[in-house]
Image (cartoon, rainbow, N blue to C red; front, side, top):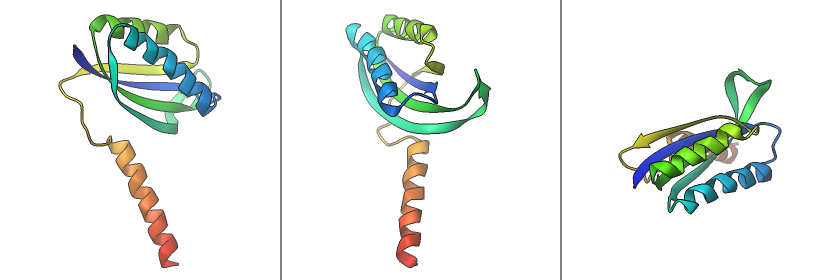
Length: 121
């Protein structure tokens, strides 16, 4: 099986629960092809670089997938059909990083800085 990294952007007006339910549908497709999700990171709601279909923000999710190419084809086909998905990108990778992605590292650094500022004041 091959390793893939996929970033998904969902519409901003979805609740986090609705976005999670939507992702579970796509994950079930991957699992039906004997694939599995190795890593999953929720990047939260972020600003888009430009408006896409009247959306200025979107729910971001990173998935690292270990599965056959057929699973990825079906996964991407279903995302193209779903109107709640603004954009997605899936690339083939050689290995899965065990440490958090740079976006998650920056989030934890900023939260540490805020707590340090609170302690100083």
